[in-house]
Length: 109
Image 1 (cartoon, one colour):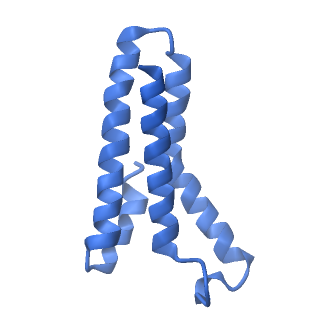
Image 2 (tube, one colour):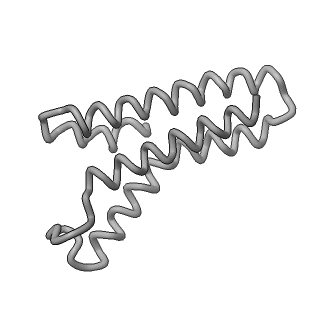
Protein backbone atom coordinates (compact mmCIF):
# COMPACT_ATOMS: atom_id res chain seq x y z
CA UNK A 1 0.00 0.00 0.00
CA UNK A 2 2.80 2.42 0.81
CA UNK A 3 4.45 1.80 -2.57
CA UNK A 4 1.19 2.66 -4.29
CA UNK A 5 0.98 5.84 -2.20
CA UNK A 6 4.49 6.82 -3.31
CA UNK A 7 3.62 6.16 -6.96
CA UNK A 8 0.52 8.33 -6.69
CA UNK A 9 2.45 11.10 -4.95
CA UNK A 10 5.21 11.12 -7.56
CA UNK A 11 2.71 10.98 -10.43
CA UNK A 12 0.73 13.90 -9.03
CA UNK A 13 3.88 15.88 -8.32
CA UNK A 14 5.34 15.42 -11.78
CA UNK A 15 2.04 16.22 -13.48
CA UNK A 16 1.51 19.33 -11.37
CA UNK A 17 5.03 20.63 -11.88
CA UNK A 18 4.89 19.82 -15.58
CA UNK A 19 1.66 21.76 -15.99
CA UNK A 20 3.09 24.66 -13.98
CA UNK A 21 6.16 24.89 -16.18
CA UNK A 22 4.08 24.46 -19.33
CA UNK A 23 1.73 27.26 -18.22
CA UNK A 24 4.65 29.59 -17.43
CA UNK A 25 6.55 28.75 -20.64
CA UNK A 26 9.96 29.98 -19.44
CA UNK A 27 11.69 29.15 -22.72
CA UNK A 28 12.33 31.17 -25.83
CA UNK A 29 11.90 34.93 -25.76
CA UNK A 30 9.33 35.10 -22.97
CA UNK A 31 9.66 38.61 -21.52
CA UNK A 32 9.03 37.42 -17.94
CA UNK A 33 12.17 35.27 -17.97
CA UNK A 34 14.82 37.68 -19.22
CA UNK A 35 16.64 37.73 -15.87
CA UNK A 36 16.98 35.52 -12.80
CA UNK A 37 14.00 37.09 -10.97
CA UNK A 38 11.50 35.43 -13.28
CA UNK A 39 13.04 32.01 -12.72
CA UNK A 40 13.13 32.55 -8.94
CA UNK A 41 9.44 33.45 -9.02
CA UNK A 42 8.70 30.30 -10.98
CA UNK A 43 10.71 28.26 -8.48
CA UNK A 44 8.69 29.73 -5.60
CA UNK A 45 5.41 28.92 -7.36
CA UNK A 46 6.60 25.40 -8.07
CA UNK A 47 7.50 24.95 -4.40
CA UNK A 48 3.99 26.10 -3.51
CA UNK A 49 2.48 23.62 -5.98
CA UNK A 50 4.71 20.81 -4.63
CA UNK A 51 3.92 21.49 -0.95
CA UNK A 52 0.82 19.22 -0.69
CA UNK A 53 2.73 16.34 -2.26
CA UNK A 54 5.64 16.83 0.12
CA UNK A 55 3.22 16.71 3.03
CA UNK A 56 1.62 13.53 1.71
CA UNK A 57 5.06 11.99 1.34
CA UNK A 58 6.04 12.89 4.90
CA UNK A 59 2.77 11.50 6.25
CA UNK A 60 3.26 8.29 4.28
CA UNK A 61 6.73 7.88 5.74
CA UNK A 62 5.57 8.66 9.26
CA UNK A 63 2.62 6.23 9.20
CA UNK A 64 4.25 3.50 7.12
CA UNK A 65 3.53 0.75 9.67
CA UNK A 66 -0.09 1.62 10.44
CA UNK A 67 -2.60 -0.10 8.13
CA UNK A 68 -5.59 2.19 8.91
CA UNK A 69 -3.49 5.30 8.35
CA UNK A 70 -2.06 3.91 5.12
CA UNK A 71 -5.57 3.25 3.80
CA UNK A 72 -6.62 6.78 4.69
CA UNK A 73 -3.46 8.16 3.10
CA UNK A 74 -4.16 6.07 -0.01
CA UNK A 75 -7.52 7.81 -0.40
CA UNK A 76 -5.87 11.18 0.23
CA UNK A 77 -3.12 10.41 -2.31
CA UNK A 78 -5.68 9.24 -4.84
CA UNK A 79 -7.77 12.38 -4.47
CA UNK A 80 -4.75 14.67 -4.23
CA UNK A 81 -2.90 13.21 -7.19
CA UNK A 82 -5.55 12.16 -9.68
CA UNK A 83 -7.93 15.03 -8.97
CA UNK A 84 -5.13 17.60 -8.97
CA UNK A 85 -3.72 16.26 -12.23
CA UNK A 86 -7.16 16.35 -13.84
CA UNK A 87 -7.86 19.90 -12.66
CA UNK A 88 -4.44 21.19 -13.73
CA UNK A 89 -4.64 19.60 -17.18
CA UNK A 90 -8.23 20.71 -17.70
CA UNK A 91 -7.61 24.28 -16.62
CA UNK A 92 -4.38 24.76 -18.57
CA UNK A 93 -4.93 22.72 -21.73
CA UNK A 94 -8.66 23.04 -22.35
CA UNK A 95 -9.78 26.28 -20.74
CA UNK A 96 -10.08 29.39 -22.88
CA UNK A 97 -10.01 31.81 -19.95
CA UNK A 98 -6.80 33.31 -18.66
CA UNK A 99 -8.12 33.20 -15.11
CA UNK A 100 -7.80 29.41 -15.10
CA UNK A 101 -4.13 29.90 -14.19
CA UNK A 102 -5.35 30.94 -10.73
CA UNK A 103 -5.76 27.23 -10.04
CA UNK A 104 -2.04 27.16 -9.15
CA UNK A 105 -2.77 29.50 -6.23
CA UNK A 106 -5.89 27.91 -4.82
CA UNK A 107 -5.61 24.16 -5.48
CA UNK A 108 -2.65 23.59 -3.12
CA UNK A 109 -4.67 25.13 -0.30
